[in-house]
Length: 126
Image 1 (cartoon, one colour):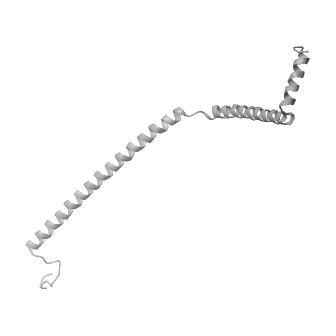
Image 2 (cartoon, rainbow, N blue to C red):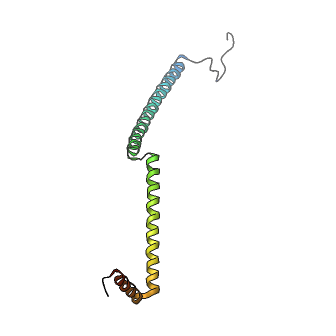
Image 3 (cartoon, rainbow, N blue to C red):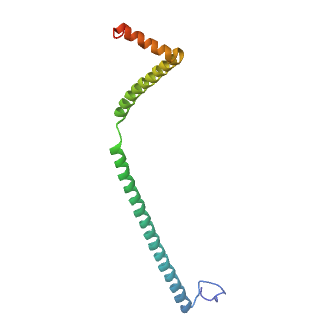
């Protein structure tokens, strides 16, 4: 302002040399900010590329798994057939165990007597 002398620390009145130094410092600050932004963009691009590679690999693995998978109806059909087979096996095992229990009950002599009687009934022995 005209007529008032500049006060100490008043930023409105600076020398040309100080103004040039401030401008140089501001330019350097802007260049540093641009370099930092460019570096950050490069890092983000690398990270995006890495994640996309992982996603592409995961997608191909998922496609391979889907190719090896059975449709639900096929699996349900297999499951019902397997259940039937398993019940037959369990029944045969139980029948075998029952036969073993009978054999233990009548003993070896009783089994031989039973077989001899069957042969006699068939007419093979007298």
